[in-house]
Structures are given as C-alpha cells and as structure tokens.
Image (cartoon, rainbow, N blue to C red; front, side):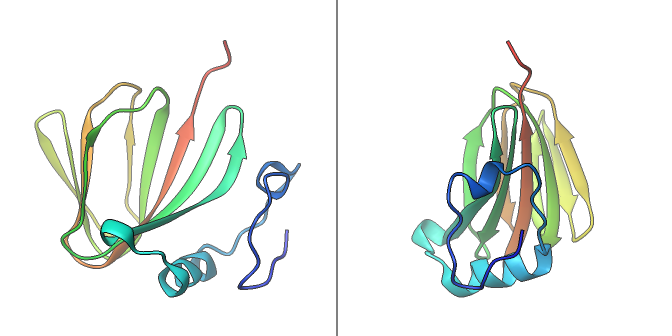
Length: 126
C-alpha cells in the first residue's frame, strides 16, 4: 500500500488484505505531523479483529501511565531510548530492541529521550 506523506489512512486501508509500510518514513511523518498532546503522538498503522499495529512517538520525559491490555503485546523501540516498567523490572530499550508482554501484565512506558516505538497487539478469537 502506497500513500502520500499527508494522506490519512481510511479504516478500509488499515485492514486491507496486505499493508506495506516504510517504518522510518512513518516515524518521520509522525514527528512532523503530531499532534503532541501530553508529549505524545500516535497513529494506527493496521487494524484487524485480532491484530493492531500502533506507532507512538514520545517527547523526552513523557510517561504513559501504568495500564494493562487484554491482548499480548510487543513493544519495538524504533527511535530514541525507552524504559518499560513491568513486574517489578525496568527494561531499557534502544532502537532494535523488542519486549513482549503477556495479556494482563501491568506496565508503563517512559521516554528517556525523544523516542518512537511500534506497538503490536494481538487477541485470540473467541
């Protein structure tokens, strides 16, 4: 799927039979476009019944408060440095690192510097 820099994805485009993305360009677009409410900006790249891909950018010092998800998640740091707190551990993340968490694991995410991460969420059918 090809799209121009300022083009918004439609719901149909986010659940197409295939979606081809340039992650570096998506991160650059997210930084450029914002919005930066509360030090973060996010956009959904893919949205299926059992799978979501969400790209999130955080300004340095911004923290996503403790929360949990009903699905399994993977957090892939693509820019900057992050700290993820989960199960009394602190995970240091740099570009290229991935952390997976099972459903229901409480966690928070904090940007040590301006950062971006790709969040993958999966759900079981039923």
